[in-house]
Length: 249
Image 1 (cartoon, rainbow, N blue to C red):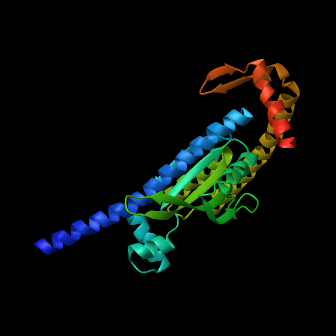
Image 2: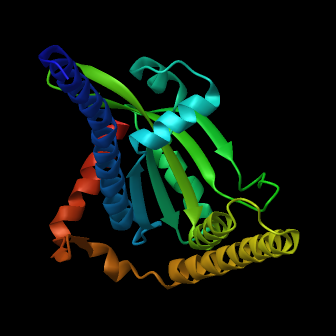
């Protein structure tokens, strides 16, 4: 291998590394946003709609294989144009309603743009798979430019995530040649998981009603931030009257 070829390899390696770093930075940005929204939601509603998150980057080999399956040109611009799930973020929630709360929170972020939405909850796949898929474009600020990077966001409940994990393991074990009886059992398990989600959602709504009914005005003079409790002085509530009179004036 001559010196020129070595230099070309180094330049290409740098170019590919920087390309992949774009998607890594996009995931970092998105996870920071989710953390902020999560903490704010917890403060406002005394409830956290997110159980956990998990992010991943596709490997160069997986990207290449998908590009070839699509029959697309082999180049970095082609990869960016045709492969939209290089960066992936999975958000797992407790309840069905949480999924759409998270989607709304993301929609309200002015610097994000939702390019595509696929709702496999209202319209499950034939095998029973359920999840909400969003393609989200997020700005990434590099040292010399701003890039708009696409991330695939999957939002699902714990039950949906458990089923999807099991289905993936079964398909991997059988190398996609899963016996028909097992496929039927998987579909029945998906239906059972969906029924459980609906039941848990009903329980969640009932708990919310009880919680609202038990709320005491004496608790309204306290706020908690980062596990530190603050008592609001009685005079502080004069701000309510001042702001009301100001808006009426």
